[in-house]
Image (tube, rainbow, N blue to C red; front, side, top):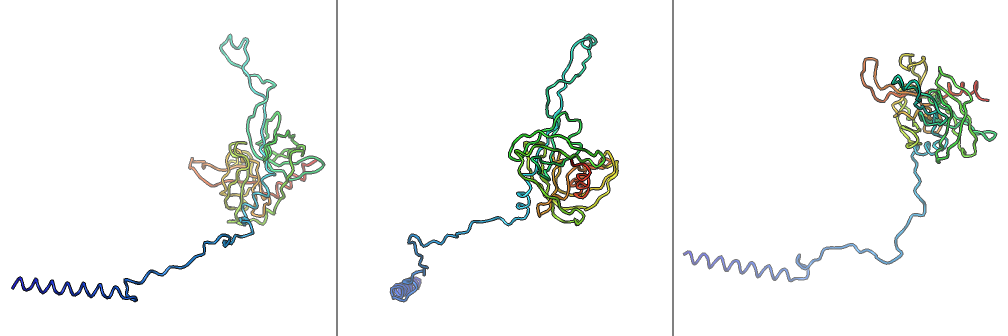
Length: 286
């Protein structure tokens, strides 16, 4: 009985295999059909190339390019201190005296707002140029230019400089700082940590269009400022805060890094509004 069952199974298997081979050999069978493929032309010269070049429409980039060459690094040069010998050494003391050699005491930023009669006029912070024996500007192209102080205002922390315009070709224009709104995007251009990082760009928003800062907050006198979360670091002082039209709406001046109780804070930078800057220029420019 067992042998009979195996025989039947073998016959059935053989019939199924024969039927499969037969149907597979038919012209319209699944086995004879080939996968459909799309035909593509590989002939030379059939590719289409756009004739127009890509142009960035980024408004921040456009604004930056409009102003960057008007931004300079301001170097505060002071006489180097030297140690003097004499009776002080007898008492094991050291005294300092100044030499005629100048060295860079600090670096900040500035922005050219006008070029006229062969001279460039630059706005920066008073604290950038304070106690200087000589001022040197470094342009965006790396040229070094000597500058002189036209006038300063310690209460507003502003200084107006003047330099020959031989290597300075671009000036920036002022915008309306009184129309600023919280949330408006702004950009800061300057030299954070000095000339090695000249014309650095940071971006943020207006946190408060008009903030009244106390003398305790500023470390000097009460002032009105634009508050922004745009990154402002040492060396940015005196550089422009601009809108997306490439207009100067403020001069960056300071930031708060901690509260009076020592609480650390971030994104609290300040700029002197353009209308206050323009008022200073009108009274100071010669």
